[in-house]
Image (cartoon, rainbow, N blue to C red):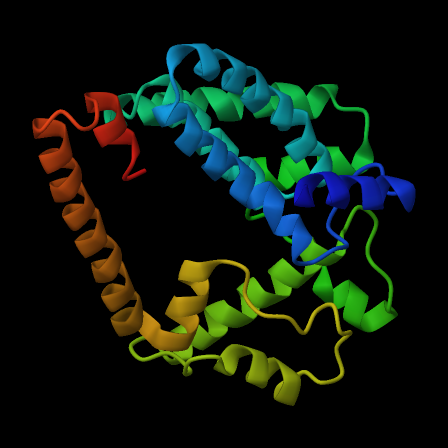
Length: 245
């Protein structure tokens, strides 16, 4: 219902692509692939066929939404589901998916969608935030999110080099922007999008290492629990491989 409302609201307000203007409801695009993937693991064979049609049907919605994170999650989960969680086969499957993105980006006849796909294929492509700061206008081809990411990436690199071990402090990145770059437009004075980049900037190598240890510990504990469930016939081998992912 949230997803349907979000799409309907944007279309009704003239946004045929780029459904990002409702900040919290747009998260439905990110959670939908995760929820559907979970259902695909546990439903019976008959319902699974229907869910695969639904899974394919949400692809154009994710492309039109412009939610890159949701699209990447969808791509990863599609690869994992198709190879039934075999890690050795996930990487080639993802590579094939990115090759498909190259073809799709060449076929799409919409500037916004094409731009979003290009930023997925070339994540280090940078917006010209200096141009915006100097002229008050975006450079041709730039988008607000790309320019903000470029500014945050450049500033975070500087801060990481200055404070590599402990970082600048939790939640201090935004405070630094508001204090030292108060003259920049509001759309540039936002936080870091990437979780790992944010932790490395604010908590340094030590903080990132501790954060990764939590992930590793959770992976091993979940794998142990799933191994027990598999040995007792509660789940199948594919489910045991896919659930940690």
